[in-house]
Image (spheres, rainbow, N blue to C red):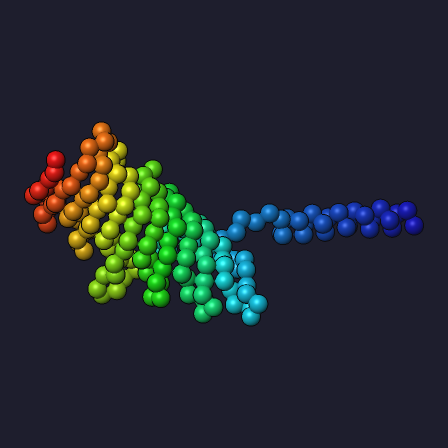
Length: 171
């Protein structure tokens, strides 16, 4: 009886170790549904996308429509924190993000033909030189007008040509 009990405990310990090893702490990858609505539609998912998936290596939360379309995301990719609002086609139209430690609000416009991302058209935020500006961009991504406050507190209004050269500036 004692010998049977010892063997049972020994076998149970070995099986427990094997199961713990197989089911032990896992690092989640891919997508995991966190919340479903009352009708069973996935509405919030946790994502850890691999490299090569746009946005590259994103880690965060995605909020979905009842049809499963991605409309709002909160996460980190390319070492930048981002809150992104997407339209019905899945393209970002507005994002609030940290880019190289500078906070920015960015309005996007679709490109033709439609791609994964659009082009920045309006940017409001802090610039690397310390100034704060509202910038209007051409569809090719170059700044065409900037209105802001320089680092020393003086106002700035600048207009740029297609090459990014200042054509008018005040003061």
